[in-house]
Length: 195
Image 1 (tube, rainbow, N blue to C red):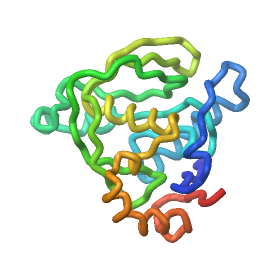
Image 2 (image 1 turned 90 degrees about the horizontal axis):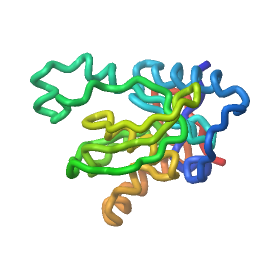
Image 3 (image 1 turned 180 degrees about the vertical axis):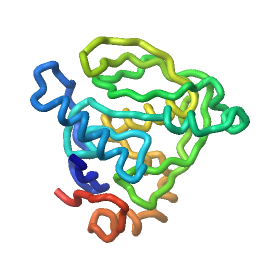
Image 4 (image 1 turned 90 degrees about the vertical axis):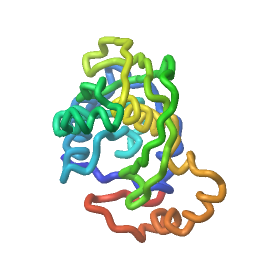
């Protein structure tokens, strides 16, 4: 089932998330719904549970689709040649380390339609996480996958891409942000506004 995407201004995006436990009711259904929601019309690479109104430490991510479509030359130009991509549901992630310097890329967010922000992020992260069967892993990710994971984990920490803006840039964007809060924005997907 396709779920509505929670819009900027909804309180769930600023709430702390809780650890996913093996007895979480409806977990497999939620994960399946998150995949279906993310894949509708090819709208996203990742989706965090708060974006579908669930305050859980859960995200789905598919950067593999992008990496498979890129030529080797495009991968080298972007600096993503060492990134095979990742398709996975990630539970209870914790970033253990961030290395490799920083790269700046423009990012968008389903909760902030038509907003793009340049975000500086570390190029490599080491992550501890669980899969859907609650097996625990520690892995290092690079390239687009590292960036996408950081973006989705930010959601689990109640942080949004607009939080990376300077005060001046945020002030200049205030009208667009208020329009989203008021539901005065069009998106290619169903959205949930307000409180």
